[in-house]
Length: 237
Image (cartoon, one colour):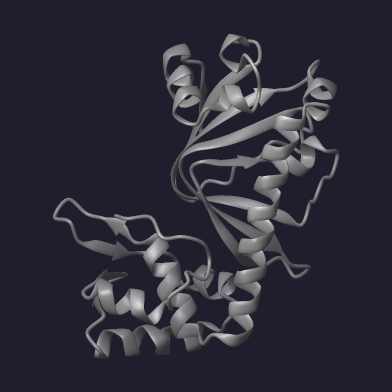
């Protein structure tokens, strides 16, 4: 994790995502209220339930997970830039059973809202943006939970691989996530996951290379993932 302040980079994100339309004069807040944070894949950002911090995901992707009582994590959905995070905390709602993990190297724009919280919460434009984000997250989570119940592991795993596979220098896509963690996130057994991966390899969709799986047929994988991505929209790699 690396936290820093870069006025030029912040201004670029503000213009790219029209953030001044969400928080008026955001670009003029300065170093005291604005910061950028970079996280690498697999890192878990922690803001210690700070209800005075509003966070924008401006680059990369994160996994939104539910923490179970036995210490396992279940994947709810992916968030890709641009998305507002910690919106519920801003409203005073702290959910300690939720966790986000970086899926692809990510950049967050953090805004300290102390002193302007009441102004924001009485701003209809800001509230509309927050409600739109909450609604989209609820829709994605609902779809994911429904698909988990009715779609086979083959579809869910295909969707997950398409999100998590990393593009190599030669243009190939390689999936190298820890398989025990993957089975927990997808709500299945490790053995079932291995059987499904073996089936993908036998059908020519994946190629097993040591601890990694290379995507040999992306179109077939997308077809297996179904017409509607289970965990959110795919990002073109």
